[in-house]
Length: 246
Image (cartoon, rainbow, N blue to C red; front, side):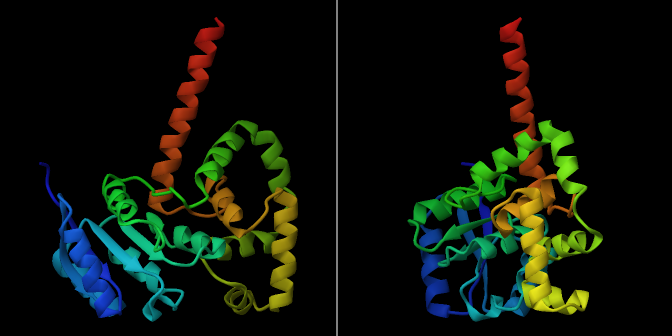
């Protein structure tokens, strides 16, 4: 058996946290080395224990602050933060990716999904299953072979729209974007609608992935890893097709 995956759990609800720790402890190769009830305790545990994976429950109140997840990601030794939530919210998904988390698991899923996600994240992969983004990743990769068309669309964006895109990629909601850019929330909504129309995207999650893929915003390390791997697969398939045609 290989080395154990050391895990720190972050959830303010002690009973749920202990129950999850009990489940993980029963799995071969997984070891819970620490627990935390808030962001401060989590940062201290990360500094002291240097775990491989940090599992955070976004449903607990301590993660309602927009910077909380980013603070934990910044302290983690590598992009190894895995989030859990019961909310199937695409904006939350986008914000989770933007914060640099390596993946997200729904609380409604069976425990086996969490075990697998932990191992995948520990292996350096971005967990996308049941995230509704696997197909989006493939679409974003394919667009790199349509650079001229995408460049034409991106050229339609105004300077202010670029600023809004960067704010969205940071995981900010409309109110925070309005405060940062000194504009009204209504103006932010108008900018977002204009951006989605120009780039031919359907929502903020697609916009975040598009921004990361096309250099409109700085991607977290975990996104860059999965994008590079996906591009390598696509390139390999393209080469294979060329060889077959010859």
